[in-house]
Image (cartoon, rainbow, N blue to C red):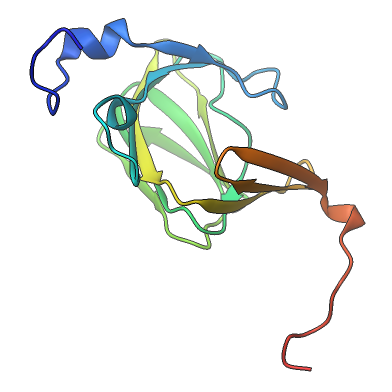
Length: 160
């Protein structure tokens, strides 16, 4: 950081730290953002600035089991798919996904960038489902494993 205040990130620094990302399972995923919380040393909480260009999408439709997540729209127009329903979202709208969360996803439906803040928890072990893809992710620290839900076998009840 060029500013000598390790707890403050200026707007210019947010723009200078933008990185592009696309989700490998979604060819229409295109997002640029800055992991502000991580840069300033937050380890338990993620706070990110994000932009989606017109006609593009955030990641892939997903639901978290352990990490709560939130989104606050700053500008632009989007379409949020949440729990199988579709909602228009605009500047000033806030979405929250407590755990276990319902599946959610965001698309830019406008002619300008969809700009928002997003954040949530960073826990050591996370489980997420990708309902449209029939997959489940297990993440332990930095190790990620993906399984097809069709291969799941019931272990029975722990109460048996």
